[in-house]
Image (cartoon, rainbow over all chains, first blue to last red; front, top):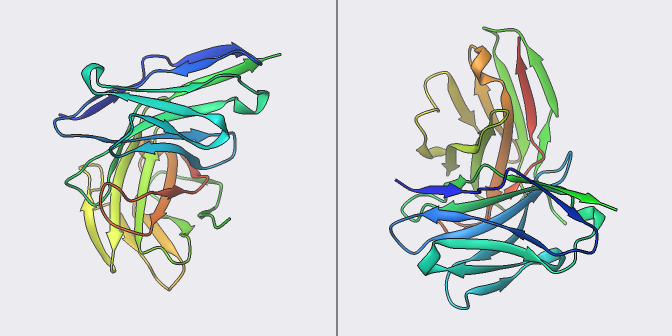
Length: 114
Length: 115
């Protein structure tokens, strides 16, 4: 069965420091992968996606993610975190034989300290 | 930037009551979805909807749930007789195309509290 795992429930990072959020997936075919962010009171906003091709993908707000097939991972990174990056981050995989159903990880809550 | 709008932001209801959660998808989108997130759990797919029909639904989406596009702009989720375990954040999403490469745009959610 397909699954998405985000091992870190909660991460605290200092402003200006780098951030890496982990995502592992279990999926038989080539996955279509997404990272979404949810700020308080906001909807889920798409940060970036991976369908195929270059395994390093760039997204909005200075985020990037790297797809590693050998490790079944799609980790999200940002070189220098801003206070506004405090939010919950969700990794998701799209089920390819569906009408676009997304399967989400449990989310990682990011706290940014001064 | 166009966005998906959900109302109300918080709905409180008594067990056994019917509730309708409302969503206004992005105007040129044709594919609509509902997801929910029970507190402390993952965001779960409920249903997808296209061309006035359910295209896919999960095991959670039983006979107590229904979806409708009553006019050209709204997309609703109805829970006929709410249970305590229906308490969750419900997210509406819309997209312009079908399938796994379809980018889904989400609303801010409706928090449903069943007492």
